[in-house]
Image (cartoon, rainbow, N blue to C red; front, side, top):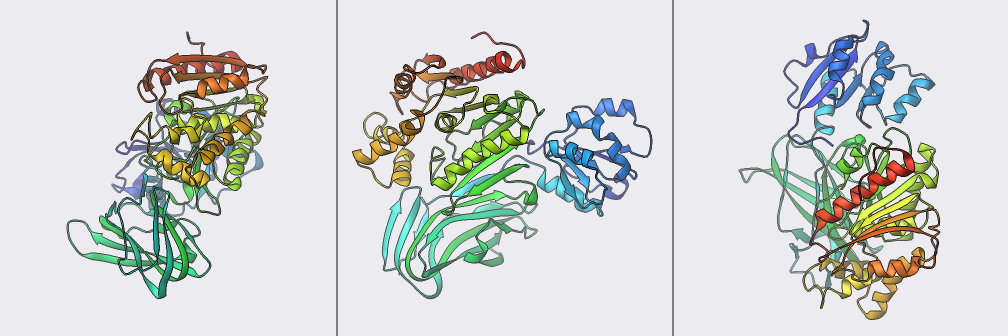
Length: 514
């Protein structure tokens, strides 16, 4: 991930220097050139080591430098000319760095790709349901379901008419395209359109009005830049009769074919339009594969990138953008199978075995690590502030933690469609059904927990009661305080245990004092 204000260092390796044709057009990047028709300038190569963000291989002769530069190339940050003749051996090397084949006939077009799609940090958010207006003329039934959706049931008219609008606008940077992903469900006789009105900043001039039919919302809709800094106003139009459920509207800076949110990021949406985000970095291709589940976060995107990158191993980030800030990685069978298969596919691509896998997460992410870790005979599971009884987390909102985590009530309603004691216990059992069946005989568990946790107070003791009759290696540490009182101590212990496991089990780095 690149800092938003940092200039990208781009190295072009080829038989003609593009800097001559680019002139002063590069506003977000510094360009360096290596003539591929000459013997490599060792002094230049050494001086650039560790400083280059993007590598461009533009000519056939440039490929002779591939092996020399490859160890220092970040994943997804090597682009090569699509017109080059690529041997099987070269292709295998390019694949290890998740390289992109790009049409390079026009250097300025490549510059635009580099500066628009490869620059800047992840940028994504959702427009939630707190500030929506329902058309006052709608005479059907209306039900607000927290941060999950608003349900409208009735007659919407024979022709499209506005049924819902978001009260506030979002700023659009003229440099970027954006991706739009509205969450919605319609009964068979209901159709919708997403309408976008774009207004120029510092004026009231309407730049354009877009009507996006439902048929074009089966994948994220690319909102092309208008060429002006603007604000976007969104509304939903509907027609027909039946039930319409509208959830949050996700918007993200588009990286086009190069990834979701960050270069190399990907998304999965189940048949209900609920998403899971993943990012896989093959690193040095040596064990283990480190999997990190993001914690609760209202900003959309990946958590833990710098931490996982610093460990130097291959890693997989998994993020949950549903509801307000995540839904504990539980969902439809389709969605849960995807998460498990994604981990398996990354192991397969690296040619690793399950005992060359470490799963990890903090708070909400701990649920993902323990829940999906139950399906793998992993080397280790490392978690902090474990949350496993999701039903209890919602129940504790009323007495133990009033107003502390109200989204837990939305999550209860979203996952189990209820709020009574039976549903609370049913949701708790989701975790234990899988965890009780797990084989941890060759898995090391490292758990740090809050002694006065006010989200899931019994989580650690409940885990302990299951493990006490099993052959398992467990190291744990209790820290005084409530769930959010001392995240630094939890995080420090978490990363220390991670490094110890890497050192002891995989001979990576040095063992840390516990």
